[in-house]
Amino acid sequence: MHQAGQVMQQALRNIYNYCLDYVQVFALIRIFQFLCIIPVTSIALKLMLRITGYTHITEQNWQSFVAHPLVIAMICLLILLFLLFIYYEMGFLFLMAFHQQRGMRYRFFPLWQQLNRKVIYFCSIQVVFLIGYIALLLPLASFLLPLTLTQTIALPQFLTEEMMSSRAGRLAYTVVASIAVIIGIRSILTLPIFTIQPNISIFRSLVQSWRFSKRGLFELVVLLAMLLAGHLFVMLGITVISLFPLYLIERIMPSAALVTAGLTLAFLEIVFVVLFSLLQAMFSQIMVAITYNTPVLGKVSMAVRHRNRYYKLLFVISCIIFSVLSVMNIQSLEKSVYAPDTKIIAHRGYVAGNVENTISGIVSAANAGADLIEIDIQQTADGKFVVFHDRTLRRLAGKSGVIANMTLSELQTLTIHQNGYSDKIASLEDCIEIAKALDVALLIELKVHGQETEDILPQLVETLRKYKVLDTYYVQSADGQKMMQLKKLVPHLRVGIVYALNIGPMEEQVDFIALEASWVTEPLIEELKQRPMDLFVWTLNDDRSLQIFMEKNISGIITDHPDIARELRAKQSKHQYFLQRVLHRLRFIF
Image 1 (cartoon, rainbow, N blue to C red):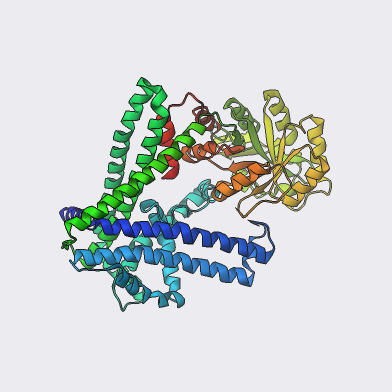
Image 2: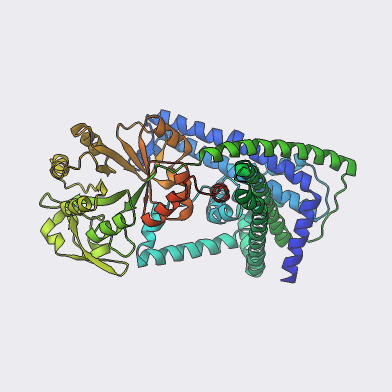
């Protein structure tokens, strides 16, 4: 532990001595990322869509999309570009740390040349090892280094939620995640070894990392834990101290709260960028120190007058950035003083204390304040509509029956179980009747299993017309063709298409889109607002994601926790303090 503390202390001192070098490197990295990587990715996507003739990529067409030879080639090039960016970004930091720790003079251009000599490996079969290495480290990288290109890469939430809904899924997820973490940590030193040693391949670097981790794994984990804990402690302390003046001003001089909030937010944004960049630099210092056991620090020899000149320039640039951010934040915070119109949609009813898609779940969802209640329907063997999500009874009833092969009366005799609760399967008409009694609208999702009758859509329309809810209910499905037919059949019915994946602009002529949260982008939100077309985002279950999409004032959020979502929406009113708004913004950004 004493040695770990010494390595941390020396790493901080080294970064301080060479702080101007790090400022230049991080500035160049961010400029290159935003001016090159992001635009190139966007242009490549548009080109791939034009080549294939698709307007956008969905779960229905992605297989044919990626099977196109030119698309395959462009995807490979994008992966290569992504790998090269990570290689140059982290490789540069590793080389800097190595020279600093050994007291060796260095210049940026020779370091760049040293990295260039190994680019040849990215054109060989060994790039497969690097792809596997990066894939294993993505969770760690996105957690430790949130400002890198890996920040938004994660498994879609609906996949993890489906896995965690059963005991077998939770066990499989835990086993796979544990194995991935162990392999990732064992191979974590691959990149520093590969970038620093001039005559070593990717595969040999991976082997050396595994050999070293047999004896140094514990020290590495301790250092990373200390690094993260220290970073969070400093970030929390600075945040509390910075927000205290805003706390006082909001209560003593409310008229100055808006400007103070904008200035405070700008200051914290800059501080957080600096802290996360420092975290990345510390990470590289520690990795090199552990790999090569070089705790001796070199001495910087830059003249004081040169340092002062650079510090003055850095101060001027920082003031300009602070001023611009302050003005932008003041304008943004001023616009955010509103109660959002976002509808709260209870996912399959209210599953807390109930079984999904049941009468009791609808009652609980209405009592929790949901604006809409989403239910799933399927057609049974006798052409009726049953409220049930899965194609089979296995998950909820523990039986092997298939919904499409059973009649409604047979299904209604069964008892279903979930999270220690039990209930009966309901029909669509039963749910409409209880929803009308509770004065709450339904969002009906039509599940298509392939054995439906030809008149399924007219039959659904007739059911809704019978209860006089055509003007108030919503109908959606993942079958876009059926939803387009339904829209033509009843133009005034609110019809939407469900997407688990979407890349690119929407061109469907429907009333709304229900899209998984991982694929919702700012351009898409703006595009749908211009049309106009409603956007429902699913499935949002944590406070941060709920808050993010309420801030964007999208049309609707589908959640398992309508009560929490309702409370968060209420907090967006004009009575909310700016202190709370600043905290929310910081959570969104970082």
